[in-house]
Image (cartoon, rainbow, N blue to C red):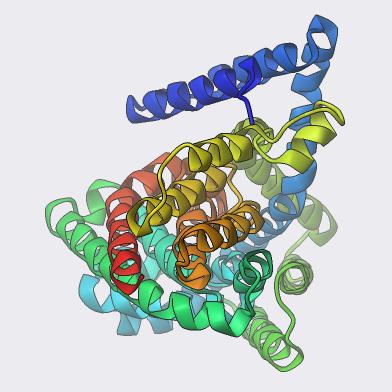
Length: 450
């Protein structure tokens, strides 16, 4: 396979984006220029290249729409609950028990991990994210640290293993030519070590922040006592808790996950929002206002994510064809394949290539989009070197999901950013050291086991 000018332009654009991120500069304009340049090189037509800018953003927006909707509904519900004083009621039990940063860190982290195992992290963070803000602040953990805890334990640790729902392992295993059970057995020790390393390193980062930069320096916390809470507010709060507990039970009993779980949480959020508005004056107008505010906040958060994702979607073959045309290439995928064909293979380089491919494909903002390629490469490497395809697939899967699943790159942490209300770049910065150390440890364990 030969690289074209479009491949080279795509690679240069990635380097520019990474450099700008390290310099803490905004990347929206460079991303738009890169989409135009790649479209121009691929089609040799200025008019089509201009059209490609719009089409790429449109396709990206359609792909992210289901996430935007659920997050907007959660934000709207949270505002409605806040207005009736339900936030006071819901946070009291947590405030009573979350007394210190250490205790809060592990309780919140492990709780998020368990929820994410059974219902995936996006619905889980929508379910508990806003409720935990005040208790975490009171215990000495700032909002950025809370967002990092939720993203690392949910979108990193839980999603990278995905042992219960098994969406990720099944995709990877199928492409690698092995059964899902075999992949789960192979990934377990690698996942365990990387999870311990990532969580412990994040713990020390959070502990350092809580000691040297307490939350009062970041955020003015509103008093949770002293304002009247009516009986009907207690009633709505109890109804909200019961409904979401029923949701969790239904998901477990009927094995509802992914989009089904998101839809269940979203529908319940609307019901709770309506109940919260119904006990207020002008509840018809209130319902409209809450939904409007929720979607305005959701779009405000996701607008840059849609544009950034539009560029990285061109790296996937199917999306590139949808945006540019049937002749388009998956530039990111083919760059990875090109590297794999020009580097001598042994257990060190094969593992490193799987790790690199996982990171590259994860940069699209979807940890799952690159899993078929990761599995296929593992199968190819295994045939050439007799290495265990399950172990090779494992390191690639971990890298892809840690990078693009919602932990490492800013445009993948938008869900947590929107729910908890912090800049996604701050979350990624806080997650960087734990995630990188986790991936390095995963690579070391993979090489040892091979």
